[in-house]
Length: 78
Image (cartoon, rainbow, N blue to C red; front, top):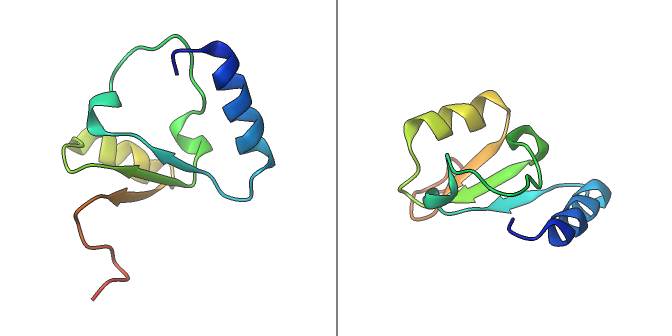
């Protein structure tokens, strides 16, 4: 996030939630930002676009994060 106060609010919301979802398009991966709202293993579901690279997919899977790629069928879809 670009605003530290906003990041603190997001962290407080995540701490009180039963499940956390992160929505980030592929351009957000491998970038340097002012602050980190949550590490990858701090979220339950990561929703992104089909431009996500294999390294990021592997990191999410290693962390136990459920990865949802927009436009791709999920395991529970026919």
